[in-house]
Length: 349
Image (cartoon, one colour):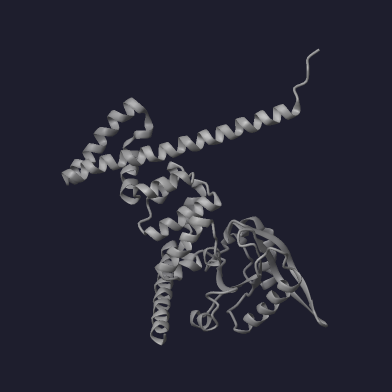
């Protein structure tokens, strides 16, 4: 009679094997990323020493021919160019951090196309914290995620401070979470749609909506009833964000933002704080999604910071160049205003 394998033993062995394989894969990835970076740096040193573009192109082609024959397709001409580019973009400490963060070589290749150091660092840290695949990283870069985050509109020193906190303690701030605009082109709304249509479409495509909102959001309720005295109020959408450890109340507006919307959402947040906030959670946050807003009005109401944010949504995606130009102009203007405000505060002090 064949004896049965003890279930506890089998479970323990499976855990050991799976853990060992993950560690081995992580170690291999760590070494591979550093190997490719060192190869790129060595080639770059030789190319820079000669200072001839034609020499560099010819050298890489000749090296690729020899290395592919000896070590395989991983050292093709195209991949050698990626290695040289990575060596140009990343210093030794950055590449070690990226490798320890379990970013793969394909992640590094995508990140190497980003020239702005702060922008590149944002994607490295978000990729690490939210565990994006290479495909997800490429999609985030393509959708101009960094340019759409609230933190991008802050002075560079503030952006760096937020990223320092994310790197050192995985501390995710609202400025790293909230975006403007949100791209909701997948909703496929009818031509003459109303607020109820927008809300219904969001619920129908809730998985895609949460992907656009960002990793960490969990849907809680639609038309959340809030009895206040003799009156009942209804919040459009309620989410919870795991890393922020806070409820996020979302109000939908089919038209332009109105200053009165702020007071309404403040009331909702106070009710949620009193009746729904659980021990250990942070105070609730609010997001007003509207079709259009006045930037100066938002700043005067101080809704570009704090517990309530206002953001536009796009139900049709404009050409990438148009959106990119608009976002860069908004970032430049916001940073200039922030710098001027800080200088004014310093003069007053």
